[in-house]
Image 1 (cartoon, protein in one colour):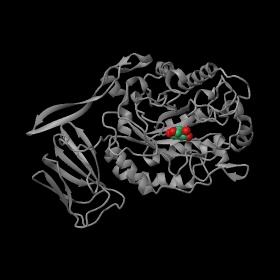
Image 2 (tube, helix red, strand yellow):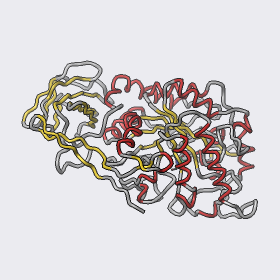
Image 3 (cartoon, helix red, strand yellow):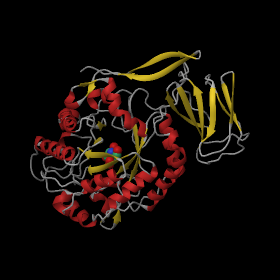
Image 4 (tube, rainbow, N blue to C red):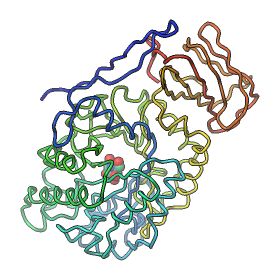
Length: 489
Ligand code: FHN
């Protein structure tokens, strides 16, 4: 198989005696509609909104949400993914459904609450679970009977998509290829993928996995043909011993989706090979290469790669506490300061932040998540331009914080995100030879920037205007060249 590697090509333009470098990705043909080669320019156009967005909301919501991490009156756990509760308690699907369905009662207007919260937080897109590993589909499916249409007489996907679009948000479907309900999903084919019946014989005899794949592809087709434009398809997940075409007829599945949604952006999780960006079963085991066949972006989970992933598109997905699905026992909430700084750190490395909420069985969002997202949104209100539409810092990470950058028409803006305001009120930045046009503090306030021997000093403020992250916009003549030998942001 042709290994598709990325090389970064810098187009050098001489301007004002400075080498201007505009990093771009030199890519071979990429997957377009139905697998046809996609040119780099078409690929960049397709990825444009996603690369500019920088910030999305993840939503894990299903039958597990009503169980809230509790099984037979006791906590199934106080940390970790409670969307896995069926596998934690090793319940067969009928036992699980009997316990969970009565507790899953979406209230009217739940989806509007989600959409308004995502908008208030400054998110540009929302990726929500259309089906998680438990196998319960949130749409009204014609090919199954374990779905919201069959059991609740509602099409929850339609309700959510309608609410998201009313707020101008892009729509993403998370869809689990793992399925703990379907009686032909052959869990014996992988020793690494989880299943509540692992190690036990199938209660319905030998399973024909190809029949499950027919169902998987049919439901995927329902989702990409029945709800208008789908902006993101977030597949989840494969194992080293069971992945790709063997496990899911993956290439066919991606081509099916692209046939109906040619602009869709898909992650790399139908596969699990170095070419698809993975080097282990862990979600921190990544390599910074992504062959076009395996998806559009790499998906580091619950962590931020130290130096980002130069040359490929990547998105860190993260919980606010320790579970993706709702748990009434998990109190380990990250502070809003941490969430804001995570967003800045990720953007400074050129990635996206997909921050998760786990609504309860009626769709209500935990109050801690609501408060945190509003705090992030309050910060975003005054600092949005330093995140949305920016790219990775072209200069090394400074001791006092992070840097995001924008380059337009030969003018660079560096957004200096100051986490730790220097005691003497003087901010210095080395490695920036470009002439300064101006310096302004986002949100108001006067600062002065002087440049001497390539070192910029910013003065004028005795203390940090914003204790979490104060941002100075530094406008410079010409784009910045990545300093030779400089470690990545
Ligand atoms: O097993 C799932 C898990 O429940 C959750 O959905 C995460 C989100 O990225 N994905 C899988 C674990 O990597």
